[in-house]
Image (cartoon, rainbow over all chains, first blue to last red; front, side, top):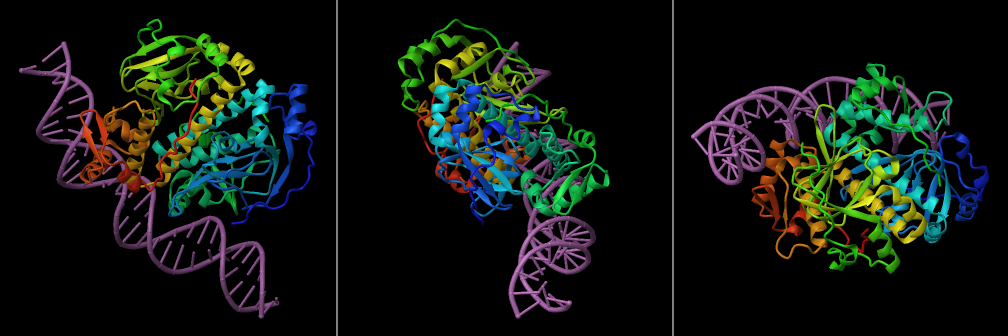
Amino acid sequence: MTIVTKSSGRQYPCAECPLRPLGVFRDFEPQELDFVSKFKTGELQVERGATVIVEGSHSAHLYTVLFGWGFRYKLLSDGRRQILNYLIPGDLIGLQGSLTGEMQHSVEALSPMLLCVFERDRLFSLYRQHPGLAYDLTWLSAREEQMLDETLLSVGRRSALERAAYLIAFISQRARALRLYKTRAEIPITQQHVADTLGLSVVHTNKTLRKLVDRKLIRWLDRGCEVLDEEGLLAVARWEGLKSQLRPLV
Amino acid sequence: MTIVTKSSGRQYPCAECPLRPLGVFRDFEPQELDFVSKFKTGELQVERGATVIVEGSHSAHLYTVLFGWGFRYKLLSDGRRQILNYLIPGDLIGLQGSLTGEMQHSVEALSPMLLCVFERDRLFSLYRQHPGLAYDLTWLSAREEQMLDETLLSVGRRSALERAAYLIAFISQRARALRLYKTRAEIPITQQHVADTLGLSVVHTNKTLRKLVDRKLIRWLDRGCEVLDEEGLLAVARWEGLKSQLRPLV
DNA sequence: CGCTTAGTTGAGTTCGTTCAACGACTGTGG
DNA sequence: CCACAGTCGTTGAACGAACTCAACTAAGCG
């Protein structure tokens, strides 16, 4: 297990945040921008496979993903792993832990990632001085809860094929909503990740994904998945898809 | 499907909140009590089986459970149901919907319930005037997320027996933490509820619960479950249990 | 008294599992 | 440059967990 690597100064001041101009985030008030600029204390670069946060730790930091992919997961004592959600640019990492004290899940990088680092200590002053930002944090937390609700429905009640289709469509929609990918998006995951997200074995996951490939809904690359027919996936999953909405970015 | 029934004035002013003196909630500042007293606009009494909130609705209200049991759930188009979590006194209902616009899950009463009613409109003024309360709302949301994480781990990666043991231990611990039950707690659910929570069929749920009964860990009553040996359940589920902490109540 | 709801149990089937083996590719060290 | 180990994906065979179908008891209620 590689733990976090180098902390490389700061390349992206909040005023020139590369995410904000994408047109999918709500705009900051000038004072909010000001506050967040100070709230952010650095950037963190992590490699693929690095563990960003370990379950049980009491991190002094809070992060926002600037670039790259990651995932949240939990382990059982005998090593069984459940992936809870995937992290993409704009996602907040570690709010749970900042509020309730201890991180109850781990976070690992799927690709090289660049993270904005915030000081947990100053979180309460955010609540005191910037109700709009406080509202945003609750919003992000509520949104995460909604995603988990849908995932739980999936794992609990959908068949293997429906589950796989739902998962890939879900990730694809989230990534596309960011408009980061001019060309076709490739999701940088292995079939083991898919298995641990769906609650299936790798073998059966492979056979299930094969069906989606045969139906020409996806293509499986070396260490990733490319979506060919999102509508088709939605149909298989019996899912209406995400509704796009302006969301906050802290 | 019975929709909500009678709205019966208000019997419990916030200053005489029956939950707060239990010693498990953080105390209000006087101004906070003041604000919440005005924020609360009434009480809602619902019968067992009543649907409190329907998925897809845009409720103008937010609720806190004063008495009784309920559950949150989602449905697939063909009727398959997944129960997401159980609601007990002190739990907030409808925060998700208040922030992101639309409720993405439904809520049903497991027993007669009494709910405090809040106006969604005034939510933002809560953020402006009372950072402490705002923080509490985020806390509650993060806590819900943690519970969902653990449930997802359970449904995705635990065996049927482990899952059942986890679920019952989890509910039992939450209920006991409230110190509402002097005697042994009885959880007012049917095996169909358990099945829809665990992602199993009723038949297999029955056979699984039978094993827990045979091991003298629980007793199954008419329409409910009594815990006989919580330690034993924890051991079966390979779970360390909830850590008790002072939590907010709005 | 019949009707409904909740729980129980057995038999046969399906879905997903484990075990095992193999090919393709990548990176590493001799 | 090749040998080797490691990761990732693929496939077949045998097994087992969980499912559906079906029948039946017991309790509660009009």
